[in-house]
Image (cartoon, rainbow over all chains, first blue to last red; front, side):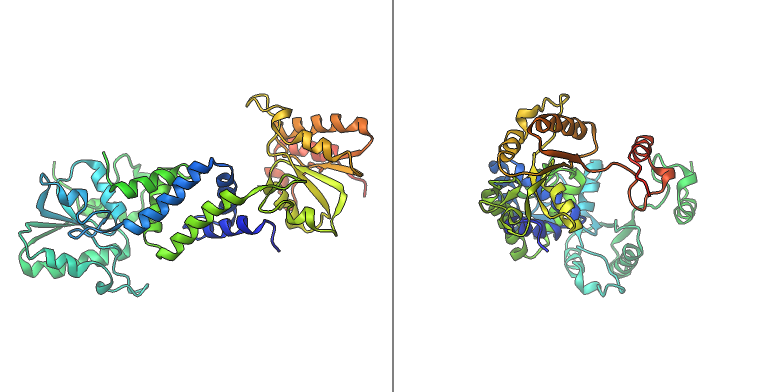
Length: 198
Length: 198
């Protein structure tokens, strides 16, 4: 049974394809949009279209950008001899926000997952190896601390080791401000293993 | 500091104006959209634009629709002598889903709220009174059970009483499947007040 007129149904249906937006949220969003100023809706509609049409991979690090090279790879003050490997552009941004990392990145766009049938050939791994032909001093692996992320980290480190380039991995441990009581056993174990002398 | 290229920033910014979508969700949505097939993004962009351009109020009940009359007002098998007054089109749909109501609706598009400066003139109340000139037998008030909804219900009933048309209000009480222990005092009190003989 159709409760709405055709155009409203169509809008709700299109909004429901977005991640984390179920039928109820799509309905709420749709009515909000129908009450927004026309100009604002045009802006949103245009931004969607234009971002999707113009955004591509950075030629060097494979993050998403709208020019040949992303702002980070273009920046001459970044240390291009140090590459941090991340799973996706959001992880890159997470590290950028720390304002403490001065090297460049490499975005894999995924992680190896035998369960989901994602193999080394399905992520930007060949592209990473190609970059190592240049003058790279260190590769810092910053994949997620999940099964897939760890598998990917292991795989990459085995691949790079023979080249003699230094490979490191960001530390696992108790998050800053974390209350020990609420932290899982695996993290506590890792924090103990990775303890540093004071 | 800008972490993304211009077009991605613009998309994130436009998505953040939607209700319930904060900076983090907008970022997640944006990257999902950038990975969607172009055809799908075009569909979404088009649905937004076209819904906003073509959707208007139903000439009779003021719900949102894309033709002069909404499907419910157009339907000759609905009882047009019985009008259920709701705050917004989502409430109308909630009652439609019960498939038990055979009358028509009137959508107020809001509720009286002195706090927010919304008076009787700011909702579709005059339009409701105009409809009562016709052959109406009963007005069922189904505004929300909030302070604003109750105020609006009271106001409408006072307005209609002198016309001699029957005015009723949907029952307050314990929701079906509700566990008494978790229900607020006000609802329990209303349920007691509105008890029905068995």
